[in-house]
Length: 165
Image (cartoon, rainbow, N blue to C red; front, side):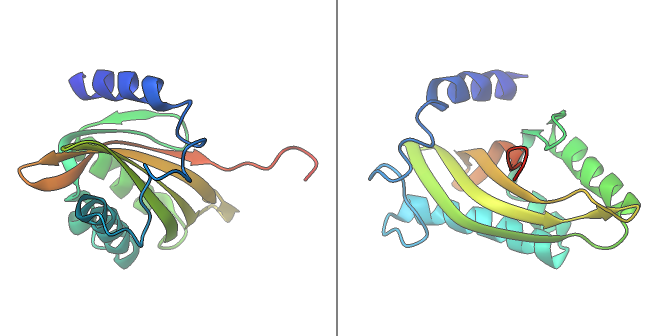
């Protein structure tokens, strides 16, 4: 609960600035020379690469024990065990192994041990012959815990075109 409150307050304070400032010097991309930003980008890339390879243990190792997530369906999930169980449950009902892509990771370091990351991803997930995955814009709050950057909160926002497009 403490993590959810922290993240909610943090996101409320930053949400109006996230997309307006992504081109400023306060944001670091994949070619950053900042070691902190690179460590965060490597942590996120490592998690995604592990999920893509099917190594869920390695992917979830980047999450803190009490991590929370707002999933694309809007549900709020707390704790690494619950996050993992949800992913395992999804794998039981999909038609085939999901395929994931990610790109354009950008990092904003807020303090020495708290950072915000945004990126784009795409999931190819089929259930009952229907495509339920798609493009998302993603965000994570990371905290440095015992010298390692860990995801404490993340969310995936589906990108939906306006009607008529």
